[in-house]
Image 1 (cartoon, one colour):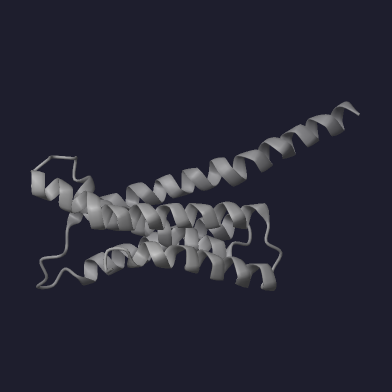
Image 2: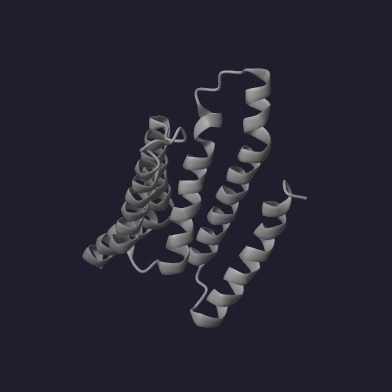
Length: 160
């Protein structure tokens, strides 16, 4: 049952978050997309830790260190989309939240450094890469469309 715990908890967590956000705020399309991104990243993170990583280690495959950094990378994405889901306000604050979560995760990795074998510099690189990916996903899903619509509105205003 230990290996299925996160997968049993995921729908419960998502339903609780959905219920809380529905009651407290307007549950916008943006929040729905962030909830889906959070759930997908959480699922991939846990599936990777429980199944992918042991499979790669047992068979001795070289997977470009994906198995080693899977927890840090998708864990960081999960944290970023969770924070954005609960706290998202506007694009400036959301980008600050992405940077803040990245810094916190990196500080967490550094706190494991003194006398602990768990510290891995590859986790730091993975954190930086997935944070950039999270910022790009956020841009292409939420910001690009609003900027394109704003430009189209300005063009339409000038022609009218």
